[in-house]
Length: 461
Image 1: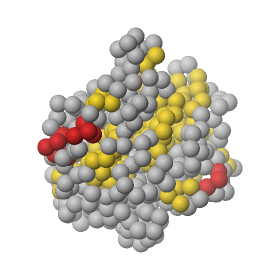
Image 2 (image 1 turned 30 degrees about the horizontal axis):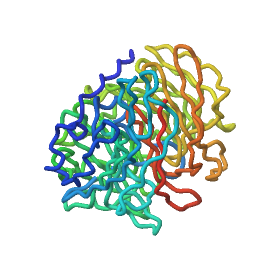
Image 3 (image 1 turned 90 degrees about the vertical axis):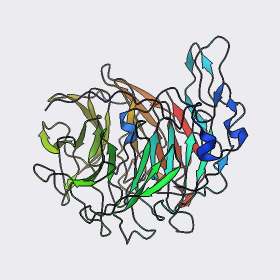
């Protein structure tokens, strides 16, 4: 099976266009629509890339999650007056806290504005890139309570929009998964997850209509599986939720698919079975899986699932058996790096193009690590032929002290590694939100030493 080219970048979101009647839907305070350094609040010139509609899980115990609200939406004008600057010599309009130098926006880490007062600190929230904004829903607060509210964060203006709980929104939950449907229908689907204790796993959720600020419960279907933190993505026609866990930490097989009207399930023919903790990526058409574990045995198998035809295929093996590898799509390659094998953490990887795997060059800037059970570790396409890998777990001990705060980018053709320095707060953001918006990596919330935080920071190349 040959790899498919990534889907072209989505059209601009209505939510993020200055011409959209935001005040009709969000009742934003007038000053929250004011220009921030030449860019109005919640504006954008292009939509998100392919892998922004995905949210996934990794290895060990607990999983990552991803998830918004109806009713009257309150806006907080938390943006910085100094944000979004551009000099006379530059035509490029930059996001808040960044300057234009020689027709390029400055990169590196910058801090995020404080969120609205009603958006309490949380971990294990659902999140997804929604155009160039980040959508956040649910999670666990510092009192051990599951939350039923969320927010939208816009890096362009450094502003937040608070999304309260609504009669149509999902009941409070943790470890849910959120999928954005793209600018065409412009909705966010929040599905699955558990109650605060993890003892009750959900098979329900809701659809958030971004333009109309309205929630609608998902249609009930007893054919769908209860899933805690499945990997989720939008294939252009339907949301696909693969894998996840049950309340007893058993792996859920296969995938459930929702086309905004009805549910269907993936075929069992050729599927990987009870596979968990794989390196995973989505190219716009095909989901790729490498490695993982089946009944306690680490795997080196490679699978591809095409949801449009509902077919599974086994691909040529590449990297050695491992779990928790970083997986990403660079535009033409499935990239797999790191993870954990039976001897410990791994610091090598391969890229798949067509049916051929190629070795990645050795990294002198990124230590051996794995994506750690949704606790830490994110991989994403930074640009054509370049992937980014940030954070992760650097030891098998499981201690939060072993969670990294740095990362690196990798250029597939040249084999060049470029370090991403540690984020400035040095907070661990354990079980926090990590979203690549197509321009910036946004990391927010989570916890340090078991206490959730409101701190957020953003990185751009």
